[in-house]
Amino acid sequence: MRLKEIPVSVWIGVTGIAIVVICALFAPWIAPYGETEVVGDVWGPASAEFLFGLDNLGRDILSRLIFGARTTIFVALSATLLSFSLGIVMSFIAATNRGWIDLGLSRINDLMMSIPSLIFALVVLATLPQNLPTLILVMAVLDSTRVFRLGRAVALDVAVMDFVEAARLRGEGTIWIIFKEILPNTLSPLLAEFGLRFAFAILFLSTLSFLGLGIQPPSADWGGMVKDNKDGIIFGISAALVPGAAIAVLTICVNMVVDWLLRRTSSLKGGRGDA
Amino acid sequence: MNLSNMFGPFIAFARRFPLATNIIRRLLLSVVLLWAVTVMIFIGVEALPGDFATTYLGQAATPEAVANIRSDLGLDQPLLTRYGDWLANAVTGDFGNSWASGKSVSDQIEKRLGNSLFLALFAALIAVPLSVSLGVIAVRYRNRVPDKVINILSLAAVSLPEFFVGYLLIMLFVVTFPTAMFPSTVYDDMDFLSRLEAIALPVTTLVLVVLAHMMRMTRAAIIQVMSSAYMETAELKGLDGLRMIIKHAAPNALAPIINVVALNLAYLIVGVVVVEVVFVYPGMGQYMVDAVTVRDLPVVQACGLIFAAIYISLNMIADILAILANPRLRHPR
Image (cartoon, rainbow over all chains, first blue to last red; front, side):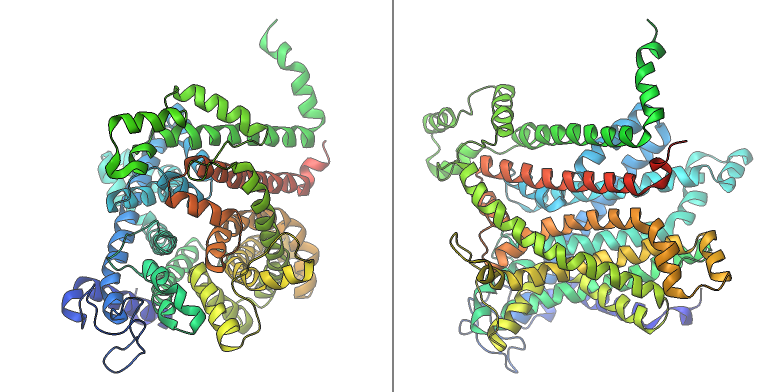
């Protein structure tokens, strides 16, 4: 594939993601003020000194945004990675063993998917202790149901393909087949799914934080910043809209890349559909 | 008596009435699913680490005080006994008393469920026809300007968190151009019109959130149908685009579209929770979120069960409609 064939929207998306990742990695060096440092009046207006103004306690919104990128990306990424590993391992176990293991895992999966994730998360978070590992684990387990469903379908699909059969007849080992035959052929849909799950994790985490059940203060995260500043909205103070817009922009960037990946996958299959 | 004799009548019935059999099977499945959800919500949640009494008492959690609270709330009973009691009461619509306020959970839910359904119903009434027609338009002008515009806008809309949309609307229509009201409080003796006025912004938020998802999936479902052989025939015999879609594609796309709609009503359920918090609307979602923050388990379990039941019923209705829309089952051989 040549670089020229990549559409503009993907470049915009990749640039956006890169900026956020750089902010997350180098937050203490980029941010003009500290994460919890009070630098002025409550809800101070935007100025050259404070680009986005100050928040409900007089902290610099830009600095908190940069530090918040760190928390948001870290939690969303760990949850997605964990949910992916969990979902893929479970789905491969189900697909290779078939029989009652497959049946049992699939039914449990269906059961978990029969409750909307946010409702499920609320029920579970009502008893579990409030800390970061728990939050990541809950997000990962709830999300892994969708990965499981895709992984199982892909694994069952690919395992019966001619080139896998041919490799098996050549006498290749299972691991070789998975890495050299199955994985390259499933990479595009899996990568797209990963992006989709990541975008979903960002939104999900932000929603939980907004409801006061995600990341706990004083550490900054984008959903929590919206919650902190929401009372200002009615007085025309846009402090809550800035982190909200940051969430939206990041998710749009991820989705633009994913959209292109999905399109590429479907055009590989041929046929008239481009959905 | 051997097995085939035993199931003989059933098999004969299934052959004769495939439609009824499929529907009955789907109904039974939902009942089993709902029961499994009660087990998960009650036994599963209580098996998780975390204890209300210790959390509630905090620093003052002496062993005696914890034991007192546990026996007050009935937590010293075996889990299965409590589950049995809870389920038996829940079936009759009694969800016990809130741990935090001591008041009846069912009374609160009775008031709030109606409010939430009112909100969701209006959002669905606007979003479903709008998104399906937008989906059809996108397919009609596939890969041309209208499709691309709709595609970009919907991609952006899918990425917006519900609360951001909500606050953006408040900023626009309450602060900058004061036309709508905030917070969206509704009370019992409010007449229908002022009630509608109160929910205008929350409904708009919900519609915006659901619309994009629903439209994108409708578009995908119709395109799937469009790529089949009979559509090629229709195209080759010279039918124009819109008639092709309405006469040939739509009947076959009905089942997938119904599925898409049902699936997206789940976003509506989740959206209701967030939107109610944003607009301070007295519905189920806000009740549940408040209960989660104070770990008021009876309220959380009741709300969770009701949300799950609504979701399961929606999916069941969608599946049954899809079965009814399938001509192969309607006309048995």
